[in-house]
Image (cartoon, rainbow, N blue to C red; front, side, top):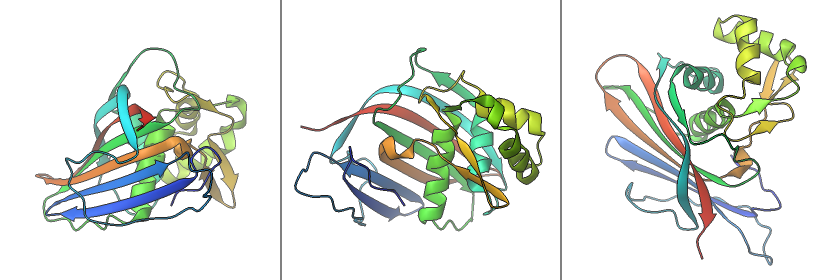
Length: 224
């Protein structure tokens, strides 16, 4: 689910199913020069517990009630990315938190009675979609083809997709060279998810028939 990189060498992932709530933690434990192993560790945890290796500090961005509609299983990254762009969001200051570790906290509200398989595909789509929504892409001129393909899958106008991909107003995580690439007949996203060193996903059920996503991004520092 997460790829290994030089600055954050070991990863662990823990899932929990606690009644109607699910918490997903991705923790990256760095600073171990003797080990380059990448691993995953799954286990039950308490939603109120703290991350073992990283400490969230100041918040960088937060958003509420990103409306996902029926949230079909296909193209969930694009659905999350677009919904977050349309949701109310706050950004802490104008300085981008570029190239530095961050923690992500997400709450996914689904309709009552919905069975949610909180597997890696769903979790990765939500994390990548959120990270991408708070990044910009440059140069903007190379986005037209990718934007057209995203528009075709979301039913939106290509011009709007180009604008959102290049929009820097919410890019608290900085700009990436190319946020989305052409791949086959579709696209491949390239958000800075490798810098997401800790993440929590809480899934709850609410009245109504619409899925919504809320969340916050925090700077993160390694525990001593």
